[in-house]
Image (tube, rainbow, N blue to C red):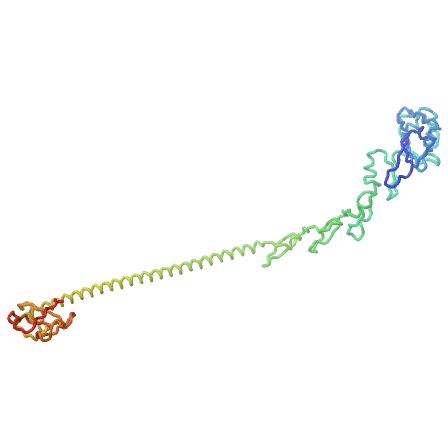
Length: 399
């Protein structure tokens, strides 16, 4: 069987591939022909491939490239002598030196002479970058001989992201896709200064950031207390234990002083309250004493007034009794009569207001007391009352 590529494909279309047997492909040609010999068995059965005519048709169909895939052991040790001689001459350029050995080991590869078909023990591949040629004997050999699609050698093509002065090159195995060099990272470990510029740190060559420096450094607080920190964290704030202890002690002392001040302030306020309360109590007591004194004075005034009123009434009664005595002169006053014994007066006195008595009615005397001037007159007998001229005024009631 053979697979043939007729010619270059039109733009945008796949090339036309034709599959046919050797007999059907007789009289035709193609640019590239891949022929499969099909036969592979330990008995050396090669079918009709022992005939030179058919082998000639198989080998003459390609114009540019012919690839023949088959088991060379089966054809070199073919059962028929004509087939064995034919394929030994084509593959080795000589006749077989020994009879067919179907179970023998494969013959070592030797460069074929001119005009002899080259035979490979695997799929021949060529690296486009390095030009290295090698054979892939088994399908699983691809991952060992060409893991990246090229050869097994390092790529070493320059990387766009490599930051070294001398480009480290691509660390991958040889690969045909060179576009990855634009975005691939250089994984070579290099030493660069840390952020503080005091130590050397390691990072990948294409890394954009500088890793944290883990070297130990000594830093000092505001009070010059020494502390050990990581270099990458020396610019970050930290808490000094000694300074924190001093701060806590100072705060405790301040709290104690503030508590003492508050206690003294409370004592002063308490004393002020007590003083104000004492002043208020004193004022209330003084007011109460003043009220009691005023009350006592008022009571005493009232008692004195009652006593004066009683005395005045008694004096009026005495004067009235004295003036009613006919033996006394008519021009006596109440004050001149008072020193005399009131009990000895036989008759009562009549006290009449001055306004109610006529001046010609009788001899009068003025009594300087609270009721105003009064007239004191003797009682006259009926004979004297009848003989007197004019009507006798009606005496007003005594006060």
